[in-house]
Image 1 (spheres, chains in turn yellow, brown):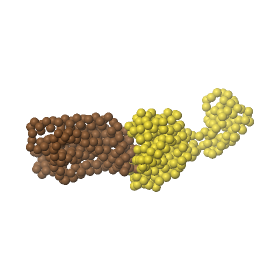
Image 2 (cartoon, chains in turn cyan, yellow; image 1 turned 180 degrees about the vertical axis):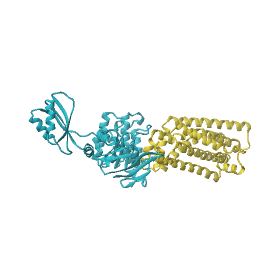
Image 3 (cartoon, one colour; image 1 turned 90 degrees about the vertical axis):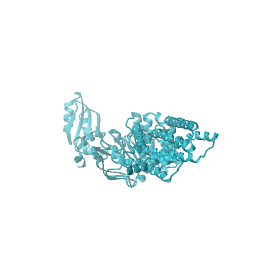
Image 4 (cartoon, one colour; image 1 turned 120 degrees about the horizontal axis):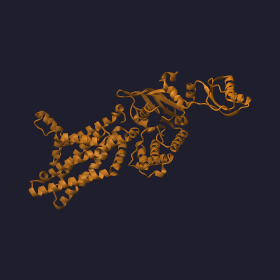
Length: 318
Length: 246
């Protein structure tokens, strides 16, 4: 649905992004991840048609963003990082106006505005001036604006920035709804759990370059290199550690400096070798209490740090 | 037809704000006062014809009011949207830059038409007591309309260059005043250059209209002037490709 080929964007001497390529399939939700200033917004703006790339091409639903801008923009709904909406209009009139700008006739635009308001729970404030709304509502108007006319592709730049936890949960629910409707979504964030919670694939960019592009699970495997299991055992500390280390397949055991009668340890093994059952059996054999046993997955935070810490493009492409 | 949608939004934004009514009020008070003074002057000191004795002064004075007010009308057109960031969204809708420029120009122009139409109250009352030949007056109105269109096109362009409305108004004043004084210093240029400058001078072109003369060359000049600045505005929007959004 979206294919970006070797995008480079320069502003004067400043290179915002360099050689960024990615593909997004129809119905897929892809997360753009990177620290502030990594080039996320620049990339998304190019895809949305705000400005053309210096080099490279983007096609949205088969239309080149530069060559056929109107056709490409017609399938895209865009939510900008800086929510900027006319404050002197009511929600309903504004969304109707957006519908008309997207090429709908007045009546159709009004219907589309109603639909967008419904999916963002904006009906209670339909007649209010946007300038008088709270930040959370304005954010929702921004999302509704992108949804007007049911575009097949949605580009959401930091949709949860500045929202309180409840509103963040609402926003996630909304993105999940979009998944059910088989829309293609690119969303950016510098908050990792958010991407982890909603996206099929993650594109990590750092200093204007793609450092990783994969599913959260695969990234996990790649960066980690080992499988890790967390065990919490009630029993004599030294004996428990010795027993864990003696188990076949265990490469390393890292334990906290805890109490003498309880051990919380991270047990490492070969990649894709799951030791959970063996560990449970060992603990049971000794008659100790098994309080917790779970696989440890890396948070995207850790993946991100591992990939970006040492200027890692080489490692990411390995 | 997206330009119509943009124009309609602009107009509702204009007439939804107090600023528009203040500008309208100032425009009407000033041009009304000038009309009154010119009329008194004509009655006291007389002249051979209404055309050169009254209307010419009325429209020359109205020219000053238009120059004072119109940069304040055009200053927000793009500058405000740049400041708020709303322009960025506009660029992601399937709409051509040219339609954005046209819609905004048209909205400011229609507001100006409303202002001018309201000034007709003075001449209409005058006509009620003392019927006169209306054609020279219509020519004058056409002239002031064309001159104002040129001001608006120029102001629209300047507004597209900045996100600061004060800068937008000040620079527009600068350009318009320069165009006004361009031909005043006859000693500063050779005869050939002077003729060229006179050809470019908005205000010298306007002068014919105030005397009731409509010359197609003058009309064409104003149309080209407007088209030129609309073109510049269009180009200015395209600079986002290397300047970025802000």
